[in-house]
Figure 1: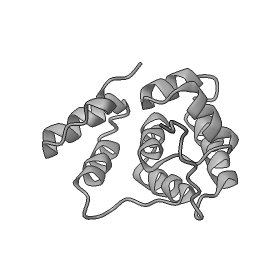
Figure 2: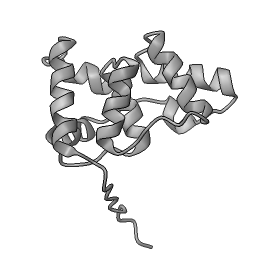
Figure 3: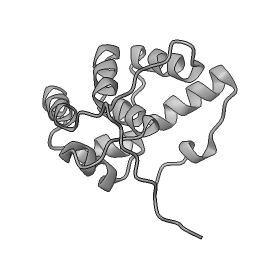
Length: 132
């Protein structure tokens, strides 16, 4: 059985713009000296966060949404960050609509976001609720 990860290449991923935006947000929100708080709030590993800020890896749609929460993005910042990752919010997706509500309400802990989404939609993903 092959357990290697699939290498996903997103043709719309702009690593330089994403890395630059992450550093800008860290500075603007006075988080540049508190990376652990950012990646823990987002439910991301240190390695993943490091790879995103260095531009080594493109976040999956799920990880990009986590990054948005960890960086305490406004809705406008979230849309821009997603676009640098090659993604966008879907107007028809209850998950995305709930996430946008969370950003507007300034809910910036990913486990709280997942609980909010599960309460609003009835959709529960136990793999995303638990954070190490």
